[in-house]
Amino acid sequence: MNDSFFNRVEKKTKVNKQTIMSLAEKLQKGNMKDKNTLMEVIDELSTLTGRDVSNEKKEKIVNAIVNDHIPNNIDQKF
Image (tube, rainbow, N blue to C red; front, side, top):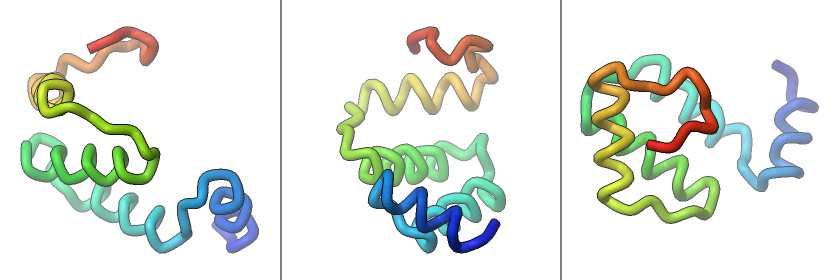
């Protein structure tokens, strides 16, 4: 990916290239069955998007991922 792509993303989302690359690396190298790793990713995404995620919602998301209960339809609620 070239810098013009990241520049467009940053302009639209206010998220810079380093942050995107850091999150991508964490996702790529992290153990997506590890609750702590998942909590870190959720917290980082929450901060990036400016949306609060309750502890209850985090637990539901983590448990769904760890137990392979991810919905096929992303519109489906946890």
